[in-house]
Amino acid sequence: MSNSFSGGSVALDVAQVAPSHGLFIPSSRGVVIDTMDDDEVENQLDSACTSTREIIAKEAAGLAELHRRFSVRDIARKFEKGQAEAQAAVEKISGEVRVREAASLDQQVLLQKLREVLEALLGRVAGRNKDDVEEALTSVDALSSKLAQRESELAEEKLEVRRLAALFKQASDDAKWMVEEARAAAKVEIESARAATRRIEEGLEEQERLFGGISQQELDDMRRELQDARRIKMLHESSKAMDMEHEVEGLRQQLAQKTQELKSLQKEQMEAMRLPEEEKGKLFRVEGMETLGACLEVSVLDGSSNISQCSFQWYRVSAEGNKVELISDI
Image 1 (tube, helix red, strand yellow):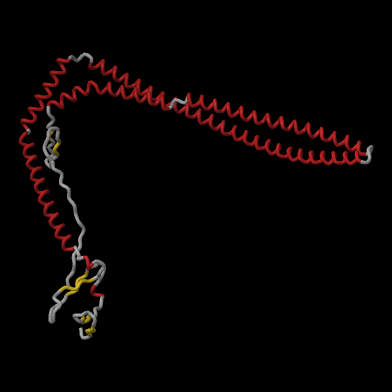
Image 2: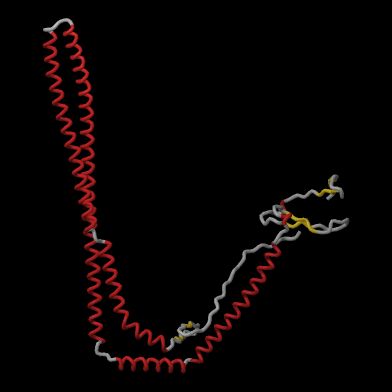
């Protein structure tokens, strides 16, 4: 039996390291070489003079942004305006309810007096006039019933107005509290930003007092001394830097060679594992010459199958494919 081998693929990326100026090269011997050139030294000295001003400008911009973001004066003004309009609307609705309630009471009193007059008149008239009085009493009763229904609706509207007024008052109080909290937080943030700006301004003034007496000639002398010191350092340590560059180049070549070998092995492995289209989905594969006396071998296609636990049954198939004969002596 033949066994098929399967393994995971391994990828290795090799970074091309090229020596350049300003490169810090670590080594196992504990040596660190700084190859910064003279232009970078001058740029650092020039940037030191302007870095403080840039910090001041950034802090000022940040303070302005904080002041804009945490300013709640406009928000409070809009909220108070909306609150006044809503309060006026509630009072208007309450006034309308009170007017309708008073009118309903007046109508009820008038209907009661009219009923009393009609009842007193009913005992004094007879015939057709009596029928008219009874019809008038019926109309008064119908109006009283409608008036009672209207009073019930007015009572429900009054309760709803009171409930809405209570909800509005609660929402108004919550909104006031939120505005006050936002105003207090904004004040704290603005004061903190102002304090930070004051500290930076004091630091700038202190720096100007310390370095204000240094002339441009002294700065140029310092640059020249620093450049000379770096040139002397590179002259004494140039051999070490070259050795380290050669060592890095050798390691780079070894990594490139190993990468090529690994890619070649992966390619061979993928070609070995590639199966024909007709064998996809099968668990085993039969290999060998299909002739009399030839030796056939069965190989596993699915790594999860164990061929030692399987039993095989061989058949003899005719050339036409329509006759299958069981082989029982194998």
